Image 1 (cartoon, rainbow, N blue to C red):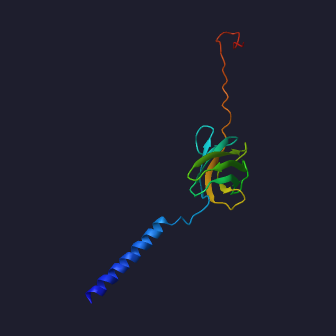
Image 2: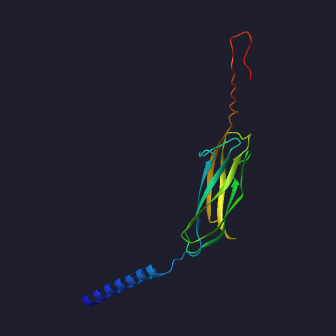
Image 3: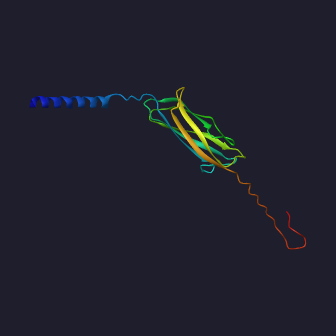
Length: 167
């Protein structure tokens, strides 16, 4: 009776160990590229909002976390909210991204001279070749009205009867 119990226990341990080894040595079920996207906005002065008439750069960081290279990688963008006063570059070609590597690109976005203060959303998707969109980002940024130009008038006056001194 005791022998049967010991043999049964050893058989269960052997089966469990074999299953664990096969899981550890079997190839990953995740084949192909897997793209992940990060996006951030930088305006001309390094801030994260756009003033009227200002242009900014959306910095794209695309990582390929998949097992194979991604070729013909393209990031596409669209202004998601009512885009009145804001325009953006539609595509950024990133070429090929090897497995485990990262590549950067950029998309330009600009605010018109008449843009009103508002929060806008830019939707960006990234895909390889003709495949489906793999990575997406939604980037929100605000706009502000432009300040009028700073005009400095420099006058020189004289206290004599001749009036102001003009060049």
